Image 1: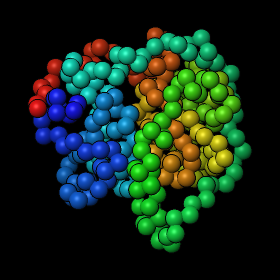
Image 2: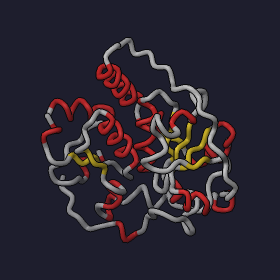
Image 3: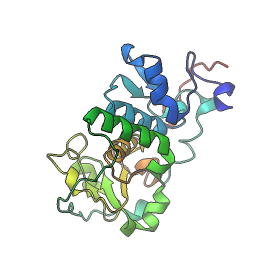
Image 4: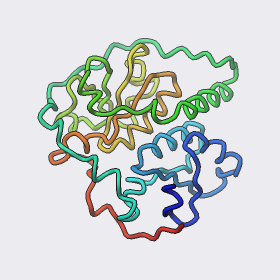
Length: 244
């Protein structure tokens, strides 16, 4: 219904869990860019993360989603920024856990490519709902999560969720750095500035077998006024055309 009410010209409406099948059936690896668009950019981030894990790096998720396209479609972000948890952020660092074991995967496959495909298809089938968590759920039970602050060190030092551990973007979650410090027996709540990058990370970690979840709307929904990093603003809303 929302797509029919107005969408980007040329866009194709595909349910999130069917994007991989659509991508491959239409040989989209042969086009310059495949832009994944959702309401806020977060589900699109999860989808794009899974496509990248398959090696389809021409996929891109549109920043801020349809909220940035037109005033008519700018619904999610304006209503989800806030300062509810501004006074609960802390500067006291928490150390990474000791390195342990990687998750054990049982796909029935013996060939790397087959195992990867099975894992990506499984995560697609689970849906973004399994890969997302609200800030209220995390703040309501911080001990229940291993909380990953996916920021640079300076921004982590500015303030973070109590108990959160800093992991540097594009560096800290590889097998030869700190990937093995993540627990295999506890949910992992990953957060960033907007929830869009953390959705990428959650997708990647879920393929590896971790129970990773992206904190929706990131710190824009926790401590908007003072936060560092990428910040939603009304100026992000453009006046691009919609078609029906």
